[in-house]
Length: 107
Image (cartoon, rainbow, N blue to C red; front, side, top):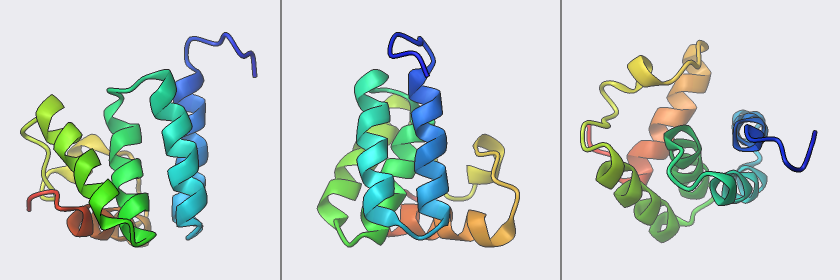
């Protein structure tokens, strides 16, 4: 893990996903912030940041992240989430979808 790795944001996002799917929402949010410092407009990190914040009960933070998501890509929806996210397990996709729904991502 080189501190100058140009793809550090992606590795950090993998840690976000692991914490989110394990139900450690505060930890996932913290790691998402780190990933987004590396690449602020990385949609996967933004999605997981919004879901993590929403599941952690930080609705206002989650809504702000959803606003950023929609500013970057207005076509982002719960209904097309499976097209842009590579989570395969139904329970895991449900957890992500529910978090994004709580955060205010449109259906």
